[in-house]
Amino acid sequence: MAEKSRIPVIKHYKGNCHVYVDAAADPEMAEAIVLNAKIQRPATCNAAEKLLVHAAVAPALLPRLAARLRAAGVELRGDARACALVPEARAAAPADWEEEYLDLIMTVAVVEDLDAAIRHVNRYGSRHTEAIVTRDAAAARRFQREVDSASVLWNASTRMADGGEYGLGAEIGISTDKLHARGPMGALELTCLKWVVDGDGQVRA
Image 1 (cartoon, rainbow, N blue to C red):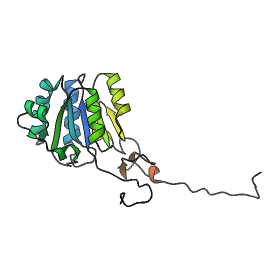
Image 2 (image 1 turned 180 degrees about the horizontal axis):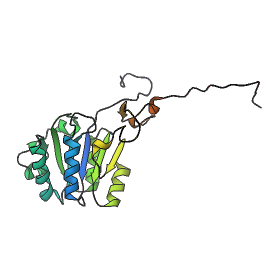
Image 3 (image 1 turned 180 degrees about the vertical axis):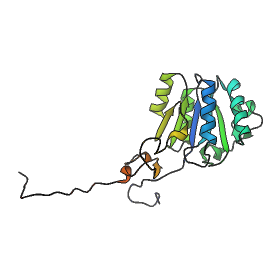
Image 4 (image 1 turned 90 degrees about the vertical axis):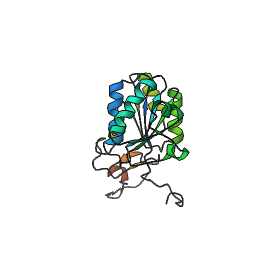
């Protein structure tokens, strides 16, 4: 529809959502957020499909995260650095980085730094929902500012990006566009105005 439309279309597009675990992440918080984002309801558009882990903490943290994910039934796919740390993971195919699985599958990458994480998300993400886990406020604010997505969360599960959680009432969809509604949409976001004017002879000077 969007490809053939001659006017802007608000579309509920795919959710290829990421969680980035920064070098300054609290390990227990990271574990709780990653697990919730992936397994709480894996068939939803705000479930995390990708996990990025900073290289400085990946050797200690990624095997721990992977063990919890695998125990919950999640199939892991990864880049070369992730597979070296988690031998049970299968090598990711090029298409995996853009895929919305809506299933217990997660693709993992080890990234060198915050810059690499932001580049990765902006290249492969679907502009839906992204999260950073960190105790570094400056890193969090930069991630929130530079990642182009309808929802960018700091120390919260991607599953929190929801119309009900945002106080919009019943959610109709989540728009990844920028005109005019973006993010979770309630009835207000799909409402247009009709001006009804009562007069008694007014004219414009």
